[in-house]
Length: 240
Image (cartoon, rainbow, N blue to C red; front, side, top):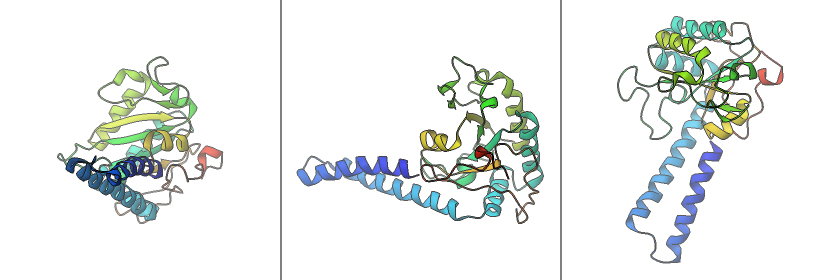
């Protein structure tokens, strides 16, 4: 979150300084400043809210929003990931299923109708990244892949059947993106948006049973912000 906020505030400050220099700032510019300030505050509030939630509360939100309150489908989703991905692959959910609202405009999850909001899944690990096309599949070779989704299913052919199976379970679109380093992914791609590890990298055991209320969730995962977060336990070989 810090990186996104700082970039917006930087341009915001430049525009505000121009206003003090004279009359170069129009009414449109002033309105834009107000909008940018509101966006910064919203982004900070969203990240702060998620960071202050317990694991059980975050899982309960994911189950409620992404799986219609059906904890069984959430468990099936996690089990399918664990069975269909290379051993030791970490899995994180990000986006509005974690924050309950779109990062860009603050619209609530499924604002365009039930089942319209997708599940953005980040996969962590070197082996899973090999599933992407070597020439067309990467933003940064060996570090961050491009998204695999309905618009470009051939960018990672070995994973598309799993992605489609997860869509059947979730009953909504599912997108995959992979990284070899979740902290760098959070910094470079997510720009600080909150994410939640549903399967720790290196963890091949089920991460705990989740009831609909998620009161008994035992997943040892954390919501992290981009630049300030420590490396996930699984990424350092200290799996839960």
